[in-house]
Length: 425
Image 1 (tube, one colour):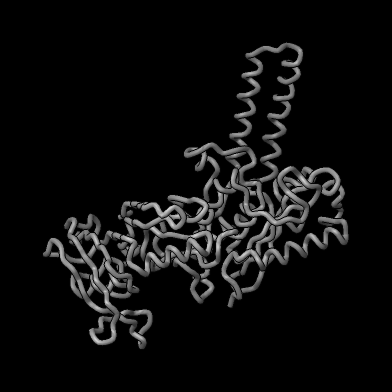
Image 2 (cartoon, rainbow, N blue to C red):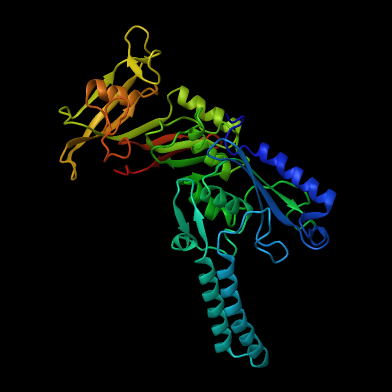
């Protein structure tokens, strides 16, 4: 059993401070590598990631940002996200050409030569970036060139501690539970010796969301709105397999955020819009809005059958089935009020199975656990892929329920804001 929430920085901070203390005591970073240059010339960032292996044993990973005294590979620290030998071959190949051009430019400031050198540098940078491979939390791999198609990627992106640590962990089937980074060495303009810092904004913000699979639609100082995928919980579950969740990924990206960041929840099998808060005041404000039913939410679902009525209201009280958790049941005596408006949008034929489904808009007036799933099953048809209140065929990889719209007051500005997310089915 894990004592703390996944990626809570406190555990890793203890190990990071212990590592810094060892540096000070021995004046060694690793065998044969002293701390002198870091302390007297230029400091760098170090990071620690605490993980669990498949047997639940703790594994402590360490990393340094970019290079350590021109070395990418140092015993006791995770490797970079690229093959070092291939990297060095590219550097050697282009370094000679670029230096030769630089010498010619110094002798003859020819604009053609300057342009040629610039193009060579860009070519080398592109080849180097193509070497980077990052493993994700869901066992996939992406390259920097996949990101370059969407935005500018600065040189050195992926060399920071957090991407290196998470990449190694995911590549080796380790479950991260705590991450911390700190600066060791001579103070810079922006960083102080032994101080702790979150992952950088300029470069890490381009990599970590892809690694941690967090689809951010909006973020400011107070809130973040994400598009949650199906088959992941909003908050950590009790088992090790369910420690990975939206709030843990959010905490990994934004270590300064509060632990209980989700203002509401979506079922594990439901995808769509989810609001997270950075601070306690914002979280409290949003929670009150949900309690007072001020937040408007809409869902899109596919139902396993043909809904005859164009629209309607389902009013069935719900409570937990204490003898069959986590099922919810209709109970007119002890159940809590649960009201759902629905509207038929379309009747569709599945191209693979030839089944007839109905696409429905759900607007819940209350927010009970499994409300839409229970109401749909009781008065209409089960939602396609619902493992609890219907069934899921092998071809169905998810439940076809998506939180497509949300409207609420911004907890700081009090402005009404809204977000939409098209159903991915």
